[in-house]
Structures are given as C-alpha cells and as structure tokens.
Length: 68
Image (cartoon, rainbow, N blue to C red):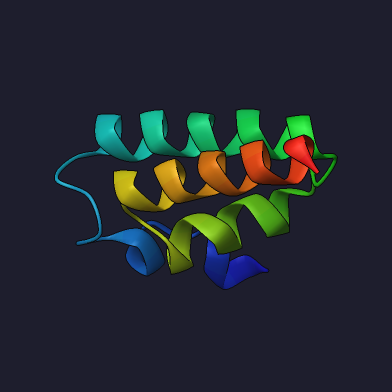
C-alpha cells in the first residue's frame, strides 16, 4: 500500500497534481456510490485506469448494472 501513496508511483500519469486530484475525487465519488470505499482500492483503480475514458466506461457499466 505504501507504493500506492507515493508521488513517484503516480508521476507522469497526469499533467499536474490538480488533474490527479480531480481524477481521484471522481474515482472516490464513484467508489462510494458502489460501496467500494477503501483507499487502497481507489488509489489502485486510479493507477490502473488514469483516463477520463475509464471513468466514462465505469459510469456506463454502473448504468447497465442498475438497469438490470
């Protein structure tokens, strides 16, 4: 978990710390909505999916799951 919390592990994925913060907040918001609210889970998701497209796909999957 310590590696997930370092700047070095996220450096280069975002153009600046503001973009990273905004993205992490959006992931956190969606994670709370689905019940997966662990810090490790949120940071791991950010590290694996650092794009707006990933957030859009997450939203689409949630919509489809709620429609079922």
